Length: 151
Image 1: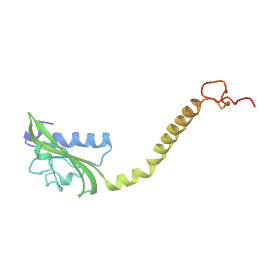
Image 2: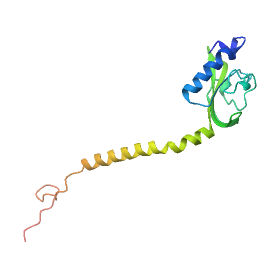
Image 3: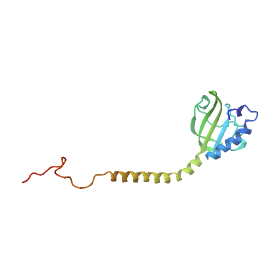
């Protein structure tokens, strides 16, 4: 990965690698690019060699940058990260998921979360009930109870 930007055809080695990462991680795109925004990889091979669309933020300075932006695949949440060699940024990688995919996945997410929340709540209630003192009335002879004077 680090040496690929120096190759005569960086896309030849980077495109298969980026596509494997994309499919293995279930994201919509993994775009490796030069510092001048030239794409070495893209899920649509017609976009290779064209300029990356979007904000790079602070990635060229060596920091991760994340935001929502509309690119060639539509609106997406994307992160742009620097690729460094000996502390010098030599390339950038943008990884993202389209908003359409996020919206498609969200309706399924609440069910497992709700089940887990109910299980935790039930466990907490059972633990709280098990820790309760018995409901027997206090013994008036104990220190905490009041004895009634004989009348």
